[in-house]
Length: 398
Image (tube, rainbow, N blue to C red; front, top):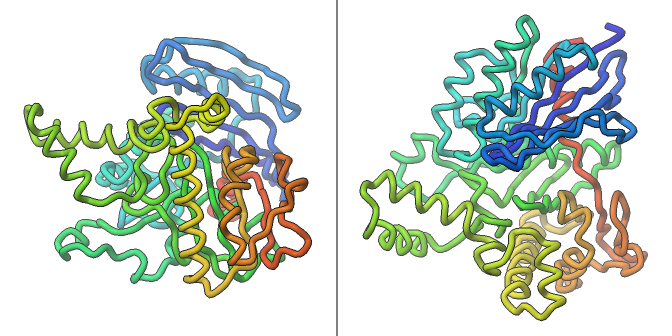
């Protein structure tokens, strides 16, 4: 097949990102990309730009719901100004215990994945909606699901099994891990020289870290849901269960039902905690850095907590891997927050991690460790869309 345009759809809690790649004849060329942001607000943005970065569409529509948002995407893709996709790949955060392989999407498969919405409540509903709409609006075009959990399926049972009564384990409660497509893209970019012992830190508004041996995941920070692990922009990360019980009991004093109390606790743990909750200011690392420069002590504490937590996970994974060959930073903070990388690595000299201040003073793909550092430290931008395209082509069998 000479031409194989593949559409990638990556839906978030308040956005739908998309791109089209030419994947025929072994190519992996991005033709254009775009997004609708701000779903559920009157401050929406809809843009598309070509491979050179030239804006083709730049609008600020009201986006009251996912239906309005995805119609904008669909109408643009059906306008004739863009190549019609031959296949579509969807990112899904979690398919639950029964859907662990990337595969062809059917209505029945979507129903099955929706059974486990509670494992990723901010992401699954909109992803499922977009999948159903794509099946309807692109008839005859095969759609494939690409799971964030897929990369983590190699973790051993001692890692995935939770210390809870078996009745809950039987319901699918276990460690799944997320950001897997991002981790997979880092391994892909390191080929053919993938380090034997590799730690990758995906640091953004959602943050996680994974231990990888010979290209396969052996452990990761996120657990049943993306709320676990490292403190994130608005998520608690790992926390004493007693804290959640205390908050739940306080919420229950005014809640009208158990379901309402659980929903309100979900908001606290996933949307009001993390960097935002600690600082009382923002979940944006750039805003927190500005506040630190202005002498804001709470912002300083929040960022210190973030860095401290990541350093602890690096140390734990160092022990689990039995050493370390390379540490990679990716994600928005990992790629652009120079001070964060410096502060995280400052206390890791005992593990053989030594940064070069000059090399670290950059953004984009780079080696930032010193020449005499026993462990290589690098920055590699994530390439999730590319990995989804690779999976779609593999599943198509072309």
